[in-house]
Length: 237
Image (cartoon, rainbow, N blue to C red):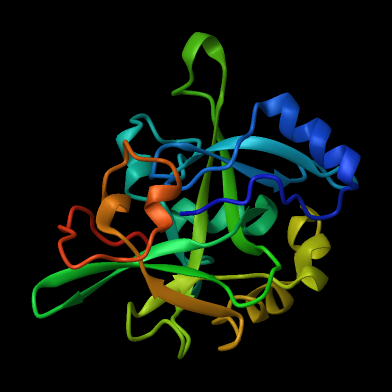
């Protein structure tokens, strides 16, 4: 995932700078599951938007092993209200995950090629997420905040690469999506659809991104013939 950490919807430029500095945020080029990502959420009805670092991979309150989160980096939009792991978060703990793009790997004839999928315009992307607080797994009595990214069927732009994609929310949906008191399931689910075909573009990049140790601009460089595959699919749920 390529993450526009300095894009925080709904705040002034000064607020963005202050909140980013408070968390020590810097641009990222290769965010892996179980690492921390900045998410925007509201913890109470009528409360302010908050920027918090969440662990990527949902850890429900009942989870007693950090490994559980690695299996829940994504949540299928079609079953959010049916699965125990996601029901309560979908009801009242929804969040926004801003970023500049994400990687997906195409597998053809046994060969893997990473693609950077990014906005077709200069506007950053905002994914739909769910967050949870787990009091069992934190250190020194501190709770663990975690997040999962909601996925849906791929659109025409990305379906040749993979059959799933993250849900991207338009700005007009942000306030209600973040509101813990907003419980209109029909409205919520109508946003969980593939992105417009013209929202995104995809380009092959170097397989450098397959190494989680590399987190710099090398990850977004154009693909070269001698790249070697190293990593699997991120949004395959």
